[in-house]
Length: 218
Ligand SMILES: [Fe+2]
Ligand SMILES: [Fe+2]
Image 1 (cartoon, rainbow, N blue to C red):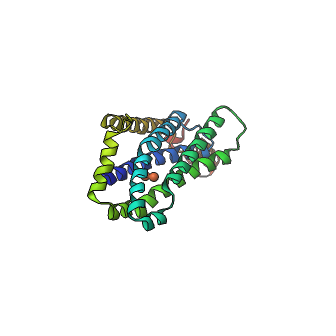
Image 2: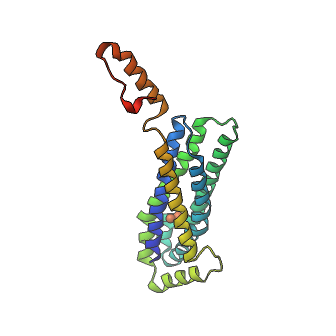
Image 3: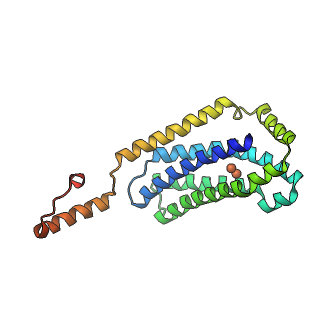
């Protein structure tokens, strides 16, 4: 069913949001995040939700408006909300480019933009799962779901095909692998914490003969 596949896509999107959040915490520690991973996530979000996921939801919402205008009213303007997601993503892309171009952008401003995007995406997904999807399942008839499914498969847009879906899966897997590699290369704790821990061990040594653990040795 279309809703099941949209729910699965939400789980996939959540995984990428977690990766982005992890990279943001690296940035917040004033270390260098993996910009290849960040660029791949931005590129994914630019294409996948905007061109693929949101249009499907917009079609369902259109049907819900016809079937149950009161339920649609409580959800609000879903297509406008999708545009707001796209605008927030665009701000993330610009903020990242500013950092990489050494433009004077306060770190907290970059943090706020990325955090706002992550939180907004999560709220949006939560709202759809809590309000929108159940309302659509309740209101739409079998024949309307079939109509939406056929509109999706009949679209000339090559984005709506199984092959493209498989490509998106591959891209997502690739991003998660890149992140695993980036995590493996990072120290378990930040450079600043590491330096403080080493200094503590050295200063405490004369009193309690504290050995510097091997994981803290340079
Ligand atoms: Fe949505
Ligand atoms: Fe969604």
